[in-house]
Every structure is written in C-alpha cells, then in structure tokens.
Image 1 (cartoon, rainbow, N blue to C red):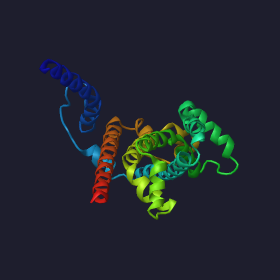
Image 2 (image 1 turned 45 degrees about the vertical axis):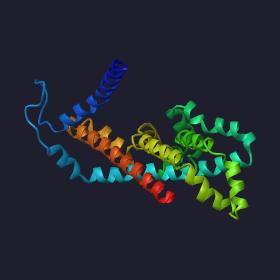
Image 3 (image 1 turned 180 degrees about the vertical axis):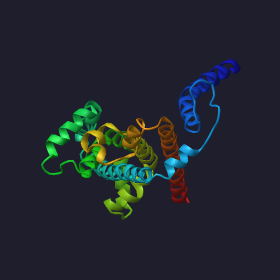
Image 4 (image 1 turned 120 degrees about the vertical axis):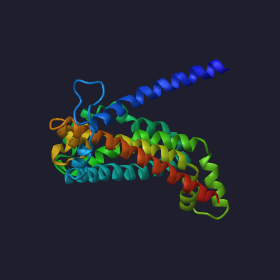
Length: 262
C-alpha cells in the first residue's frame, strides 16, 4: 500500500511540475531584466509589470474581455436552464434532439463557425460586438449543457416539481427556489469552465471583429511583437486573474449553499 501511495504521489507530483513549470518560467522571464546566456536571469526587476499596469490599454482590454465573457455566459445560462427544465419535465422525448443541437459547436471548428455567422448576420449585425457576444453564447453551449444536465440527472426533477406543486408552490417557484438550488454545483462548474474558455479565446474575436476591439488576447498578440518581457507579464497576470476569479466563484457558491442550508 505504501509503495502504491508513493508511486501515485510521484506521478501526481511530476504532472503538477509539468503543468506549473511553463507558468513559472514565464513569470521568471517577466521579472528578469534580461535572460539570454545564463541558466537563471542575472538580475530582476518589476518594471515590466509597472509598465503594464500603468498602460490604459491593459485596463481597457481587461474590461472588454470581462464584458464579452460575462454577458454570453448569462445569456447561455438562462437559455440552457429554461430549455433543459422544460424538456426534462414536460418534453423528455426531445432530449436527444436538444443534445444533438447543443453539441454542434463541438463539431464545428471556430473558423467555420465565425465564417457562418459573418455570412448569416453581416447585413444585420455587421462586425459589431453583439455578433461576438452571440457567437460566444453559442460557442459555450456544450459546456453549459453538459454540466447542468449532469446535475439534473442526480435529482428527479419531475417528481420534485410535482411535490412542490402539492405543497402549494407554483412552477416558477419550484424552478427558481428548489430545482436551481439543487443544481448549483453543476451551474458553478459550467460557469467557471465557460468563463475560462471565453476569457482566453482568440480565434473568434479576431475573425469576427478584428483587432479594433482589443481584448486581452488581442493585446497579447500585438505585444508579442513589441516586447517578450511585457507579454510574459501579461500572460502571468492573465493566469492570476483567472485563478482569482475561479477562487472567488468557488467560495461564493459555497457560501450561498451554506446560507441556503441554514
């Protein structure tokens, strides 16, 4: 048993080292004055971070990235929750059809999806930000669907709604106060996975509206030509922001669950 545990810990440790080493090397390069001929940088400095945080482009790009990540998540979350509730409770025979439609973004590459949206909505939306938001809402449908559907499978939604109605609750009350409260873990996983995917997405925003709407990834693409140190600082900051937002989201959902249980 001890040998197996040692083997498991060794494998997990090597895997963690493999995942963390590129990020750590990027961080070291972002605080190095130069790093060319030596194993480790000869000197360190925070001037690249000072230059990044004092640049208004960075904060504007951060705001745009958060906007185009959060709004599609809200749209997709509301749509998937309502449709899954109706299909699960009232129209279960259409579940396979719904699953086939929702999982289509898995099959379509990002380039094909972008070109199709441009052809379809070029006369109405043009290359506006709303075209990107609509594309993102479709792009994350599989993540939203799978996480929420797995949570719904763990509870008998139909019987739960019927029990709520017998106790005097309406269908809307049963959905908002009982069903959603029981599938919060699935919603949490779906939202965090969707956010991390959209916050780092580059292909769709570059193809649909181009560099004129500068998000974090567009800014990183441009900075790669200017300075490797600043782009490394931006990458490190990006990972830190994703970790902080994920941590806040996890703790917020835990506090909500504890509050409801009390």
